[in-house]
Amino acid sequence: MNSTVNATTIAPTDKGAAGDAYPSVMNAVATSFEALTPAQWETGTECTGWTVRDLAAHLLGAQEDALSVPTVLWRRLRGRRRYPHLSLLDAANQVQVDDHAALEPAELCRTYRENIPGVAKRVRTFPGALAGIAVDKTMAPGNAPLRLGYLFNVIYLRDAWMHGIDLARAAGFPRVATDADATVLEQILRDAATAWGAGAAVELVLSGELAGTWQLGDGEPQGQLGADGIELCRSLSGRLPESGISTASGNPVLAARLAELRIVF
Image (cartoon, rainbow, N blue to C red; front, side):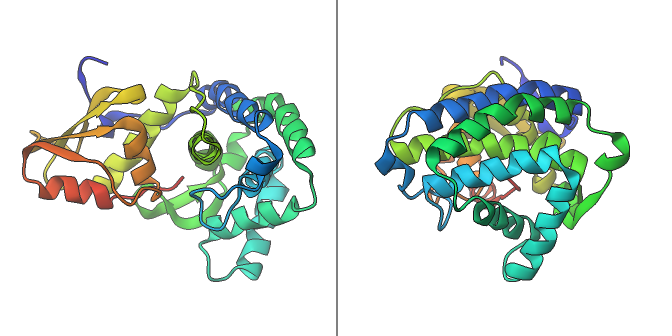
């Protein structure tokens, strides 16, 4: 990417593009699962309280949610009752883990791999009448209602993508790159731009696997920041204590502001 892209101009991923992106992301995750040793399945991850096995159970649950609207709604209801101290999304995620507590790693791997074509087809053909169902009142960008269409087209896609990074870091092997990296990054930065909101615009130069130049905010940039692309995504998800964001020009306060920014994964 040679030119600067204003992230506020990016449209949400539609169901066709999301359906096309899911196989690459999920196959990369499945390949990583299949490479794990028995000991690695019990390794802790950067997702608080979760082992690699818990992470796999959550991702299998997310597939099931995409395949069945009653399942995703029922898990949110159960999550609210069982984990009232968690956000609705986090509570539902924990229910996904609970629901698969009895599955052995081999079965988690097999079922996850088998579900991939069905998930892609379901997302690609998801009815518009169901896409508007809200599952949270304020969790979408700009504190808007989080609707099933956005959950499946954007949130679950980048969640699986980010967990591929979590998995690689926990197991100590390289991340498996996907053909959907650019699509996922666009949506991450789109939501980051919404969270950035008004105020001074900033140019963001990303390096590494996700190299490119972006702008958050409208108007003339008041500074230029730099970061590794993967590490910035980890920071935006809340996984990274030290953001690694550097100030190339402008007020260092802009870097601190970006380091504090969080979006939903």
